[in-house]
Image: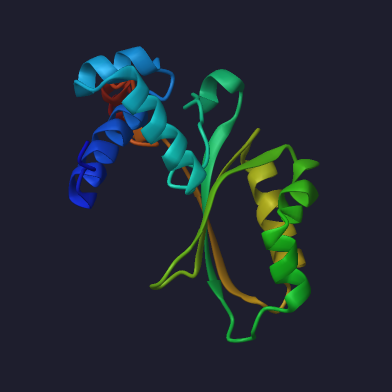
Length: 177
């Protein structure tokens, strides 16, 4: 039996990834039917994607409001001072998240960026006071390494994790306030 070309394998992976991104809770049978692949092929591709870390987690998209939380974004511009090895290790080992847990804040995503800001953190907290305490903790933890920090409150999610908000009709209520 001839092996599939690398290009075909990548196309098949993209089809499966697209279905998983729409709804990671779909069964292998549903994905196979939608992609017109065998169940075994879908299972094998998903396992390979997990093994090579193309897929490195599954997440439920949640509504912060229903969790009595609010979404926030922190934009950070670093100073020119190189980060100390201890702080880099703390980030790599995810100890920062443990330090911030007591503030009732949860990091949703964290990315180092190239541009005006060097670090973008999306998180949720119970209220604006908790979000400000989160920022103060970051400032304290990275004292001397942060030049500027901006806190933004998310007002209405149109799309999260590539998933359209099922309650998009509430957007008109938001703008009528």
